[in-house]
Length: 416
Image (tube, rainbow, N blue to C red; front, side, top):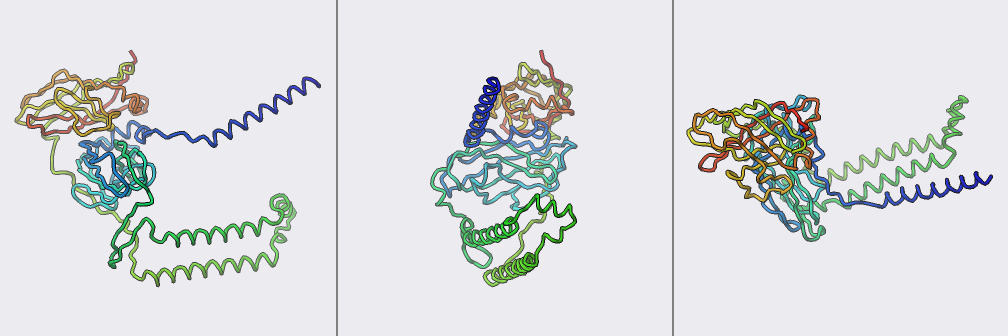
């Protein structure tokens, strides 16, 4: 008996402790510091969309102020088979909720409020105008949604928004000349309709829940008396609720038509395939990866690349960009755009030969080293069933013009 008493008391305190832990975890809400791009598979970041020449016009704005995100992206030729081709794509910003409002978006100078088609191997420039809405410091990414392929996340940067959210306005002038604030337009109507349906739904559930539910009903059904579960009063109420709901819907529709006689449906079609920028970089420089290794202890990718300079000028290897991470050759290229520090390796690129003469074909050993391989989870590509890497090598001519050339191929890991 004494042993049983001790055991029961121990179980009691164990149950109390377990309950306390669960309760504390419910009320504990940690600060979210994760970056969206880290959660995406490395092969997606490497072999789908390469974002480059990124510029955030500001990193601090007030509520209602705007800033722009602009740059270029390359649709990689070696698009992974597991992802749908970007024939239906939508340019957007990835952020923790509607902290900013996207006012405009352009691709190759074309206004793109809807989905577009993109060409494999094409280069595109883009620009988005964002308006501050919710105060705080937020990590905002570029984002391309691909039908059947999901969101493809680009580089992100912290944007600080100051002020009071209550001051936010999103005013537009509609086709009838009326100016409205989309932030507060018809808020009362929306709340009213939601409350009405909530009340009706709760009353409907309450009607059926007011009597014994599970076991008594189950026993009657097993006894072949399912028809006894519905009374004449239940049937009358059901018909009344059905008729009432239909009348409410008809009344609401008629009222909305009277109040807003001029309407157009939401525009959701495909704008068409946008032609890529009229620049053939591949005709300027050829780059063929002969072999590539990822050295796990050194956090280094080493490539042997055969390069041919088809231009009439000396070109220099300035940068390797993959998954938004920029490995820079400090002797050739220095970042002046305030690029996110966690995605920048300012001295992370080493080359066995920096300059390539016009018409020259050389074999160059290239090494990209930085902790970002592990921190950004890009090294996970070596554990994929199809362990392939990809990226852009940026060649720079004497005038500072850049030539982004895609490279890629199998990646063999080494652990020594």
